[in-house]
Amino acid sequence: MGDRNLIANAMGEASLTTGAAAGFDYQPVAMMPDTKVIKVGGQSIMDRGRAALFPILDELVAAKDRHKLLLCCGGGTRARHIYAMASDLELPTGVLAALGGYVPRQNARMLQMLLAKHGGLFIMHDDFEKLPLYFRLGCIPIMTGMPPFGYWEKPTAGGRIPQHRTDAGVFLTAEVLGVKRAIFIKDEAGLYEDDPKKNPSAKLIKRISARELLERDLDDLVVERIVVEYLTRARSCHELQIVNGLERGMVTRALEGEDVGSIIHKD
Amino acid sequence: MSKLVTGDGRTHIDSKLMRESLVDRKVIARTHTDHEFEIMPNVVLVGIGGQSIFDRGKSALLPLVEEVAALKGKHKMMIGVGGGTRVRHTVSIALDLGVPTGGVAQLVGAMEEANAVFLNALLAKHRSIVMQREHFWELPLYIENGMLPIVISIPPYHFWEPPPEDGPLPAHGSDFGLFILAEVLGMSRVVFVKDEDGMYTRDPKKHPDATLIRRTTLEAVLAMPPEDLMLDKQLFLAWRNARHIKRVQIVNGLKRGELTRALAGEDVGTIIERA
Image 1 (tube, rainbow over the protein chains, first blue to last red):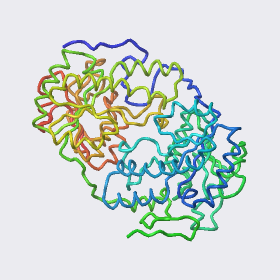
Image 2: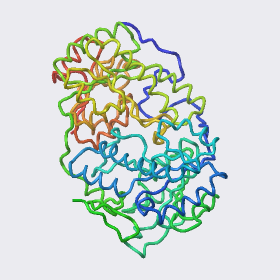
Image 3: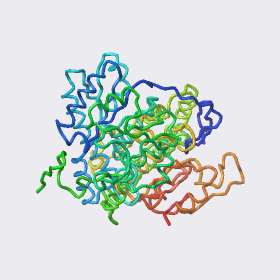
């Protein structure tokens, strides 16, 4: 039997079955650290329509020449309808993830139409490497928040809702670009100890570490649970900022780096 | 009949998940059922090793190709291939350069696709076809018409690879990718073709005293992992929550007939099942 035709390299015969790479002094480069990676909520913002969205767009447009804005869209009620239907049909999580991907893409296209005259540009995952060009041209790239896992999404323990949805995609986008803080525009002042829509006396948490938040083991969270888990071992994106887009000026202040809303940070 | 619900500033479509937080554990639990629909249950997925089989070239590959061609009429199957030594070279250069983990994940798929194209050239006269990602739903068309889809093994996590737990390398590799593909389609088994008789207690290439594990369980592998896992750790972690895959088998592709016996349901190589 012929030998293996191997290229000599530092990974040599490494099995590559885990994340470990012995012998490397790994120092990742920050690809585009000054980008503002911003999530526009689906249920929280888009489903409210003009009343909620237009003032936020005004703030984003006003800031666009000072900052590189990358907008990522959430899904919302249509995604919930898809997940409910697909769960009823007992389809696998991967199918839910692929189908759930359609809605944030629709939302991104809507945003593009609204922002076209200001340089709004709908982009797909495959366009990601063209971001420097879009920013150089003064455009506002707009994409789905959903990561591209689709049918390859892992099965969820004890349910069918995909673990990686649009919050995860936004965090992972910031992580790979080397952006320190990801901004989530929602319809609440930040992270609460309980769902403030159902429990009006729930307390706001202004600042908390990812580890502490995981230890509290809350039944509900303002961001996808897996994002908080990833935050504990992130290399670049060390903060999630959740701001209330319904309150005028909050988005602007967040873009200027103010600690408005809630901040979940790596320890 | 769907209806629209308003009144809280948002416009909802009435559904079981309307207004709900999809992060809420109680809401997630409501989407669970014991049964799950099987999309293409009678298909078997065969993963061919990159470094173990492909990089050996003609002497290892051509007999295996003949075997696969003969099997095609008897089994509904899909094939995936690993990237082998070029992946390791890519990774070693990229880590030295400081390419972020997601960037490394974006790069490695190309080497696997190259091997898929190699394999397709060898199997084209037996009606193989390289599946493009966006042609996912053409898989039944291929299978039901006696074709042999060669699927892309690396999962499409690309730039969005989650931060790994234990180092800078993307943890969702080609073994994981094939496993998830088989799982989402409701298949019950995956067979990996390597250059050893199965999974050993230690890497048999470096330790002659390593012993072969004939049969084990997912739980046993997770509780006491062998020194060299042979397959992506993420495969085993994802398997815990999987609904369909019952058996993962590792066979020696350098031994003629092993794959044939595995597909016939024989207990060759290493068999890993869920307890």
